[in-house]
Length: 119
Image (cartoon, rainbow, N blue to C red; front, side, top):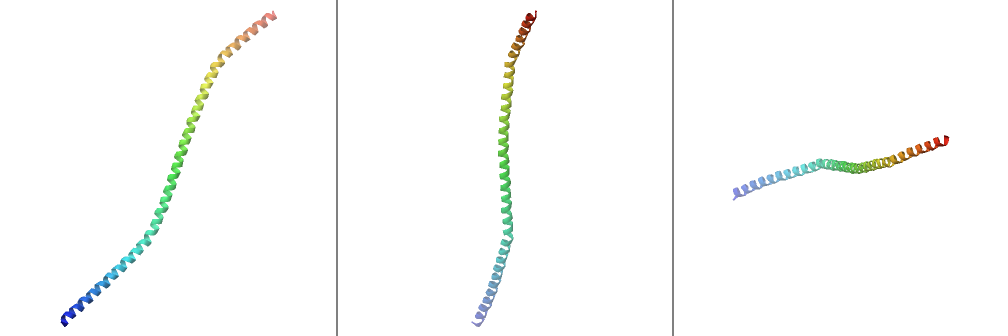
């Protein structure tokens, strides 16, 4: 019985030693977790800041695209205005040509009348 008790005491000491080892492992793991969290926090902050920069750049690009579309629309409007003005110029020239011919004919008539009067 004493030998059995001694064996149980030895087993208890071994189990106690194992338990102390496991507790030390848990403490080391927890310390490692704290260190990891400490190291990860700045990286997460950097990631968040980088994402904000990316979002700002994307917003700038979107604004440039919108401005480009507006400028393109303005250009098309100006081109249409130029085409309409050119068409108006052609029409004006078409209308002015007969009037110039009439003026030239009238001047010839006036010159002939003046020549008759002078004679």
